[in-house]
Image 1 (cartoon, rainbow, N blue to C red):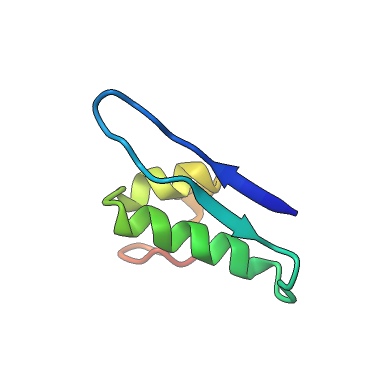
Image 2: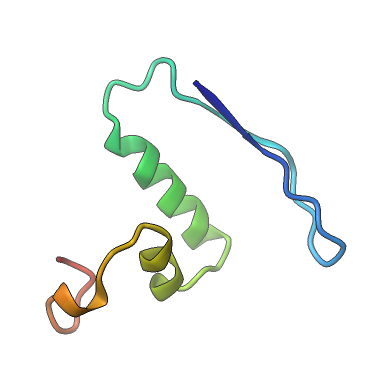
Length: 66
């Protein structure tokens, strides 16, 4: 599967990003790559948790661990 993201916005333009999952043997690598990309783009941990539907109430105090 190839996922292509073309996000063109008047305020912020980004390049087309292609994610090729054909040779991915570790499915969680896709999630980890997307999470890293969001962090590098400056999104907060709260926003990233919302994207991945992580419940904030179930986390250890002071960490991002479940």
